[in-house]
Amino acid sequence: MTHTIEFVARDHSGITTIVTSTGVTDLASAIVEIESGGTYVAGPSSFERTRVRIATALGTAYLYVNWDGSKRNNLHDLAHQVTRPIVLPGRRRRTLRDVLRRRR
Image 1 (cartoon, rainbow, N blue to C red):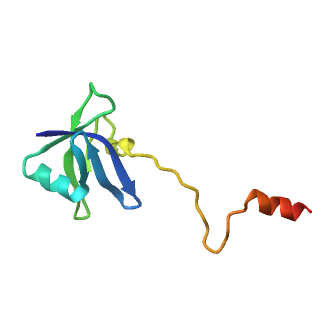
Image 2: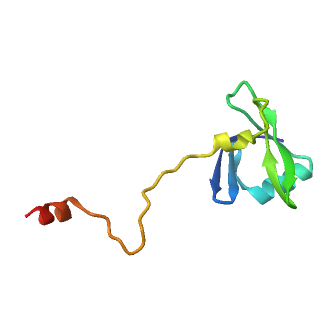
Image 3: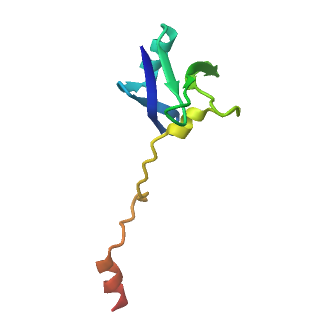
């Protein structure tokens, strides 16, 4: 069965979760499935897909795909961008009420 990667989730260590057309898979399960003969494909559009391979660096396996001819891992281009404000510990976010209170 061929799984088409729609987007990926990542954290500071790299890609952690893969969202495909057939469901959600964690990285370790996807690597095991590819090693056992499964196929994952990814690409910038629905017309251009490239097969995902397993690469290793420093003894750690990771998924690698390259559809644009560069040497970088294009799978990171499919990362789901979630943005949230950074709250510093020990500091409370200022509200409009706090700003107006200080002006008096």
